[in-house]
Length: 281
Length: 276
Image (cartoon, rainbow over all chains, first blue to last red):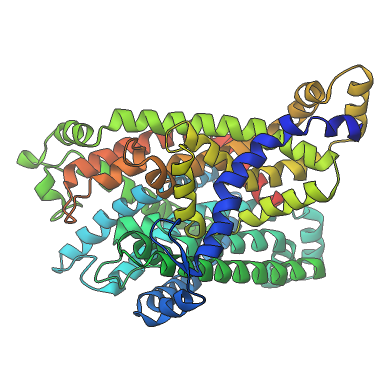
């Protein structure tokens, strides 16, 4: 049977393969190669070795600052979102009235696009700060916490849904057995529930980490990096390096490669770390 | 008794939390009827007296953003990209599972790999490639979305196809079905739940996507996120009234879609997470 299927390669695989090669594979390889060159339009590339990688850090502090900003943002968002989403998921397992309504409300922000979310929160935060004579661009701290709040608002519902599914998968017998054995609510939580939902923890951490690092639309709409690029995350810094500074295309591509490696290493390290916990339980 | 009190506290807490979730959307809705110069100063009050401008912000916003056409392009690109992704990545995933060789596993791992690569890594070279290959139009961008959506979609379809027993397909082959007929008459109907999940996850992404369409077709064809971003003038000045109205208009279709197929969306998101 495999042989007959094989003859259908052009119809079954070619469309996806061609699209993947054009949209991703070729641009990816070109991107890696171009990071070692100086170029404006791709065809005029000159090999310059690692100089773009050095310039990314030495020409100015924008890249390193955006990396630090992104890292701080990611740490706070990942912890905050997962703790709150998990706590809400636990509440949902009690038989409270109106759970359907609450689930609908909490998940809704996730469907709204990043650009729209950014402007929604800009109005709210500016309206609040206006009472004190400030705006979101007065101080980078406002932009930072604005992004943190926005990210929480957007992702809590999504993660909550995943945690609820995980908690519902725990068999009632195990929970009942733990209680019969005299385990208190905290012991049940830390010894039974959390170990059992480790697969959900893995995926939620993965989604929040990668989404926090890659954040772009929300950043562009909420502050666009203001004041003076100090609320600029890595993705926005790379975008500005490419499109608002002529002669920096090679540096932008080098920054993108570094960004890719950082995201890949952190995501894979997290996956293998939490997956190991899954096996143990 | 103690349990009842705890439940009551939890319930009140949830109500407060839900109010905090609805609040931002409510503020935008209220301000969309307010005169544009009153919005920044007092966004948290109801529009009263002179402040109330009726639908003026909406007509102004629709005129300056070309909202109906943006809505049309967003819908066109999302619908046809999802159709292309469902048709082609499901066939590709089936082929990868059923034909095992070095090439198919290389393809599979390349697709999975593409999922963790940030868009900035390929944004410049991809938009150049699209430009050279004349894919910088609403039809061409569908091919690009097929390429970018292939990672997650093939990954999810292969995960499910591995659990489909081979016997059903062999029976269809013996009955004289070609692989094409076998796939569409026998395999795909079994895949429907996964197909719904794939469609939902991809439409959440494509409908809201800003940077990819902006770089590829942004100059000539504006989708909703691009039209919204264009409201921000060159010097950072924004007509806040028009902005509020356009935010409301762009949220409405999402909420209608969400409320009408909420069951599938929630299930799809949870199922997508388990597979991932």
